[in-house]
Length: 398
Image (tube, rainbow, N blue to C red; front, side, top):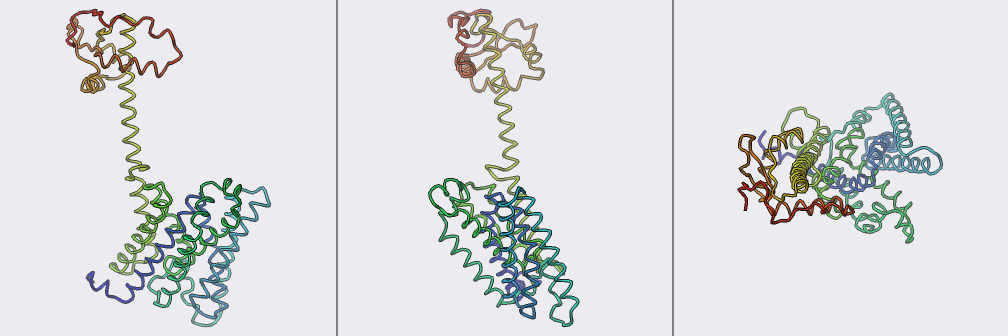
């Protein structure tokens, strides 16, 4: 099947539009979950949606997406309230309360699902697809529901942007100026449940956690400001959704939901490795540069101390002695310092090997470096040699 045929296919168009809506709402609300360090909350709410799916099915008497999403949202919000109540009223930590909510609601959902599958009627067929999603079953009418939920979430976030920002970054200050922190936290949690509900048809309750967390986690690696992180997380969610949908359409019998999650995972891995500020590669490069700079400063400090000890500003230090002192080769560090004009090679007792001495610029920098390290040491300059003193007068410098 060519790309044109894929894009003009009615089912694929529905899936791609649904993936775009899912990516938008996941990135938008997942950002607040990641910044509030409540990633496990998304997992709990995703599993808590299963009994709501079954209850919505029982109330509607069939596979009606509106009732199913309403039921999933209700059980998700109730579970979130349960977690908040347990944390506030008991000594249990948040992770323990989330674990209880996740296991209890998922067990209840499996029981209800088993009950529905055991009843007569063909309409319950495919209800278990909400566990892992069934994107191909998305209808145009389902997209209107998903679009309305996504638009409602976007409007709500824009309307309460300043309040949400305060609650996320400084809840104590927000409470001190009269912001209803608890109410806003409950609202944010309910909205995360809303994001889970949107993804039921596409990804399913089991994998929806990844869609809530992955785009925001990837965006967090690239950008620190909330104003920029939210649209980037939405963009990454859209990219993951569209890529997963197109790969699923391109291949044969490949599930769309898992492919969407795998696409989001690839974005997270790329961000973890290559992000300029927080990426692992950049961190390793910065650490390597810091170690190299530290080695240069240590070599410079050693040459300075030798100059002070021998009262000779241009005291020539043998390369072999420096290697023995540091326990490793210092030639490259000296060569880098030479290119910076801080040290110079000198011809001194050639039978002992190459020697190095500080230049005037190197001596001044080492002196500032020593003063910065030991500012309280008033005796550090008592042995400072006269700059005009030139011992071992075979220096090639100056």
